[in-house]
Image: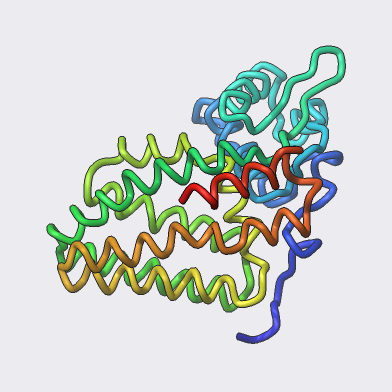
Length: 263
């Protein structure tokens, strides 16, 4: 790969935006014709997962309201949704803070993916169509472009779309909603791993292997490729904890040892 045209501000994409507010690329996403709370929630979740709002940082509610051109009400409602996913911590008389990454929640999300995505990819392989093959190929083409540009945020959106497409084709949008609701903490770990050397290439090649299994109409081949892919988190998480200990909850190392030993 060529050297990156775009870089995250540090090795894992974190910035000081948790103090300053939202990054510019998220500020103009509000559509006045749509309900505000759901949009603010999606923007805030994206900023947290992408580490623009870093773990432990303060959520500057007034500045975010000013940036988005909204009142406090939709932001507070969105924050309550984020709190239910353990993405923010509300401390009375102190403020709202982005939660540290909770490893138990990471593992819970991983178990949900393991249970549902492997089943769904088998179903998708058994009902493949030329139209869906073309949709997957287009997504992979876009992933390759973003990987070549080291555009981590856009690659993440395509990564999410890839898994959502397979879930919705193999089962339903409801199944993806269940998975998505369970993996908020896991998503932050996935996003942190992107800047690691050659990691985007690795993720892309694993996606290609999944698609190859789907195109072969071989459910077990596709499921085996998906299993390798979603288990990739265990090969990087210890390194991430070592390099950015301040991003993780205090019991992260202990929980990791216990979980790895039980597998």
